[in-house]
Image (cartoon, rainbow, N blue to C red; front, top):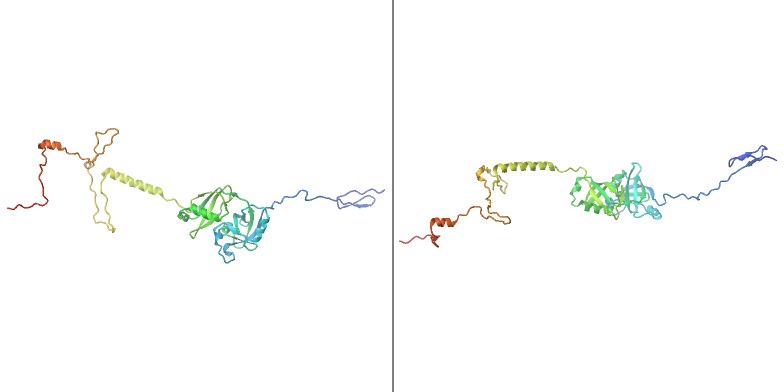
Length: 333
């Protein structure tokens, strides 16, 4: 009886001493769907587009409103893909320029762009360092609702606005989200103001749709504080000079110089005469002062008592004076 050949690995041929050969095939049976692999990207939209500024958007209508906000225009195929995914609303996206490693976040305004193209505001392309026709990665994201944000105007001209918080609140209605480090552009009174997002809470990228957000401003770029210290020193010197003048001369009524309406100066300036120590008079004290009683002294001059005059001149006689006439008539001879 021939000896059986030795077993070898699957798919190889094993031969015994008798020369009988036997093909041995070991079948491996497994089901690759017994442990399904989770689809990590099943609820995520990610694709690349050629980006252009809004001025390149074809159409008769003026789309300058896109430049005033933080939303982009995408092709209709993106809407078809997003509708099939279980994404959260509102739709927010993360834009990444892989060449410069710059990223920002935005919302979507419309799905009317040509296939393979998306249109971005000019300030957003500047933040991403993108040129016309550059590639940008667009990914759907979920952002937390903003509670606080801090902005730094890039020009001191922003201080000319009467109510900057109200202007910023009205401009942010066209934005969907904010990213720390971005320089956004707002349009007010036909003038563009740029503001850098210095800080956002609770995250570096937040959603500002239907939120109650506290806004704060940092000092504008290139702003210099007014020199208040120099003014304070000048006022202190003026007070010192004035106090010395009053200490030497005392109070002098009508000691200033006059000014003419036509602007001409007088030929002779008044020179104040020096005061003598005897000219400065103190007030008359009230020696009859009593606690809880207020006395108003109408006349500081002592009154001459008529009684003393009567006693000196004699007895008082009523109607003893002489009459006077306004016009003296001459007596006839």
